[in-house]
Image (tube, rainbow, N blue to C red; front, side):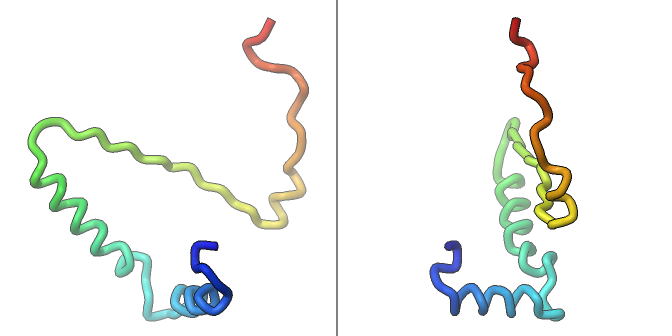
Length: 75
């Protein structure tokens, strides 16, 4: 849905699988803009960072299931 249609999706896959394209190059502009915003800000700045990682590999999906039926912290 992010690419809007199948041809744009295929183009995104081609772009991201290109060996001449790197994550560092894609994010370089974002990192530079972030550094500039930090430099222009006086006082405290709250940085919220989510380090959550999800993996949906088929091998790991076999272990997905119900963990239990009790509620922690309930009487």
